[in-house]
Length: 170
Image 1 (cartoon, one colour):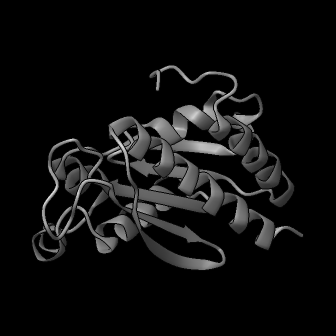
Image 2 (cartoon, rainbow, N blue to C red):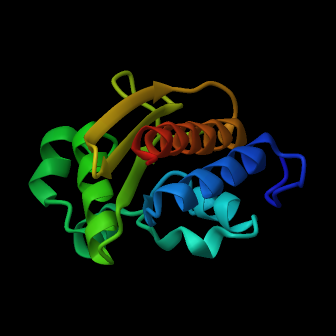
Image 3 (cartoon, rainbow, N blue to C red):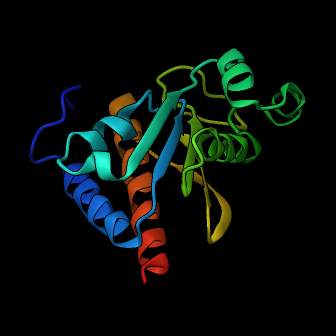
């Protein structure tokens, strides 16, 4: 997969659906990305109309950034690890609250090819959402190389956003 988003990337079609659905709800979006390194934001902003829904995207790749930029408690990372549902939840809440967006997404995980452990293998991704409809964290185990894991993570985030916005549509 090329680092440049091709026009026929299926995630771009999903991003267009998310943009249209969020426009119907009037919701604004904020992202806190770790293992995707801004790829969710890049996919959304590759589409016209993205400025109508996206408030901010924070790339908090290191534990220090998660702690200092997003306020993830150091003890949470010690107790659960930076790759955990708890950290993803803190990231989603922080993204949402930094600019008072309606919806926040937090993503952390192991994209590979290195960094995996028996407990948290390569492809383990935690995605959390904070919204007017509540908070939820999901664990995913994606397969493939680094690009494939990151692309599947983007697709997972966009699918969750689409489902959420459809549920919240007037």
